[in-house]
Image (cartoon, rainbow over all chains, first blue to last red; front, side):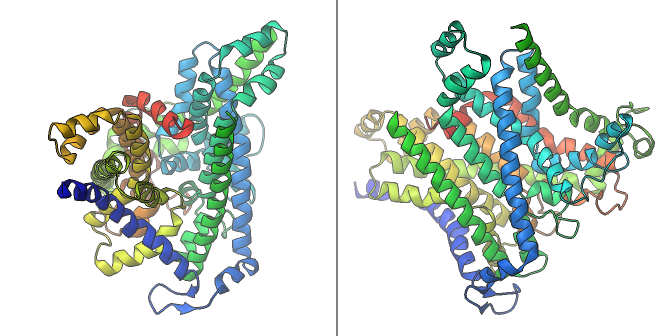
Length: 287
Length: 277
């Protein structure tokens, strides 16, 4: 049975090797690169924490950090909130399935396509948004070149894409809620808001944590839609950390600095994930 | 009571309108000629159906057809490759009593926790120096690798829910480990396979960043890179917008189809990943 014992390790080996070679070693190497000044071609020069100190002096980085925070906060405010709202209301109206499909469609198309669609929606002359505004007697705006309007315009495009996902998860959560307490509330004459606030929402806590964490992590990593819609412009005003990392590394070839941004981003995301895992496991103990 | 449902209907109809607003004019746009696009309002119907010519233009001149086939191959190879390798590893980790099973699992799973930016620079350098850069093989291997951690997470949890007696019985009958995996455990996990195929194929199909960094020539580039490069709104270089939209619609067909066919499994997958059942 030595062969059988050996085979069980051989089963793990290919997957493990792939992950280590293509993901974990590169991740470790990025840490090393982040301590160097490197144009990607010559010999990297060790500069210690130089790249990290550079962050506070670099106004592009600071803008990018601020934009990332705006993305994170407003995706929570729009996408998670609307996802919950839609999930809570959709089963109480006629044509519920039609409405669900409507919110479901954007999640089946890519972020790139979403970006292309909204690029056209926001286009200054022929775009749908400005055409509608002018019909209603308002002046059109250049949505993607005014700062900070461009960031909010892109956040709305992202909201359009992601509400369906949050709706699906909240619908799963709502299914697991027992109906008796909700019925009891109605009989006792609680208002809609009271029922939701004191009965339904507390029971949705675990699933809400999941949605919030997913939304946080996705918006920290936001890249595709910005790359397509503004490419971080005009004048690098709408970049987020992920976009800055890409531009510094593969357009300007400041690979050491790009690596430092990647590490900074990773530390933030890992910290958020850690809090999330801690919250979820803590709650499971209480059940 | 009446007021309440009136409010709910108002909210839902307003949201429904906002959600359909981008879809309808975009679809319409793909059917217009470039000239009509310049003079018509967005709700006006095209004088005749230009979808065919638009698509052919995007398909041939912009080489979207080539990119489309590339991504189809990456999606199929990447998703199936990752599903095979990770289910095999998970079978061993969950069921074969290997030493340090959780440790192995943890190492593989840790590939899901970092933002993708952390892999880019070293991968790029590694690919250039090993000759994997701008090759089909290099892209396929990378896509398999990036999908393995999540697949392993799902398969391990799934295999742990299957009863262990099956394995004992089969081994008493003289089945090899691989045969038990191939003939019993893999067929039993059909729904996990469906979920993962949907998720991973979609991920690979929609990938923009790695395609941009790891490839250069049209014969290797994936579809989203091709699409992203087509847009010339920003530069104002007079891109043929209707044919771009026709191309974008066509590029969405595989994932829309997958989601439509595997909708049940999508819900199931979200339940697996979010509710931790």
